[in-house]
Length: 311
Image 1 (tube, rainbow, N blue to C red):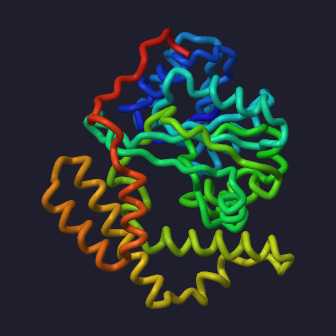
Image 2: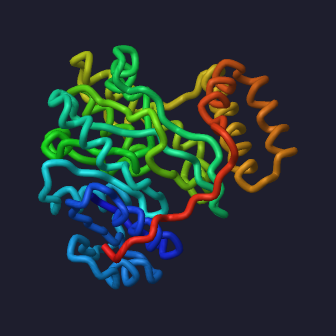
């Protein structure tokens, strides 16, 4: 499994503990330090477990760090986990069982719960990727069915697909999933198997317009590939990029809904409700669908990384 690491010393110990606590014990853990300036790499190096190694490199971005780990990986199955996210103990065991039961499946994700900075679990992310409609959306770059930290895949399939596109670091996961879906079916374990940290430092929160432009590039390039048309060039796409009124409304709704979600994580419910109302007014069907996906099941919980000996 591959953990790209960049200035996340606050979370890396809990992240590694969640990996070491897996009921599936046969692990190769590759932590790729992407030129961090904090002490995260040193923390990882101090973990006393022969299954873990730390690879230090210059800062080239998360996609390059994942590709470096992919080049070093020796197992038949590869998994990805961001350094501020967590796995629950049965995560790998359940997903590997899916791969073993159906040899046509090339990749398996899982539902993840949203995790706030203070450790609260609120809502979840993940949807069925295996039905015909979802697979078509996947192949066309229109669906990221689960967080990248939930993904496990056949190593050869990821390599044959070309790994992560390093020119598209914010959406390289979406782009890879489009190519994997062409290679074969993608499945989702429809119960929470990990926690995905949500915070205001992510690109989708800081630069939502650029993020949505790149999402649309991935979609158009994947569709062109499926239809046998010439490959789409990013520079040409950016130079001719213009939003329609419908796209502006959708982007506005998505931006407000995400901001509302971050406010809920911080306990600022009144302002969150106001932003959610604005999102509903702009795109009712989109916003209601997103609300349904994020609704917490049962009481809000606090998540603690499982204790385990060092990786």
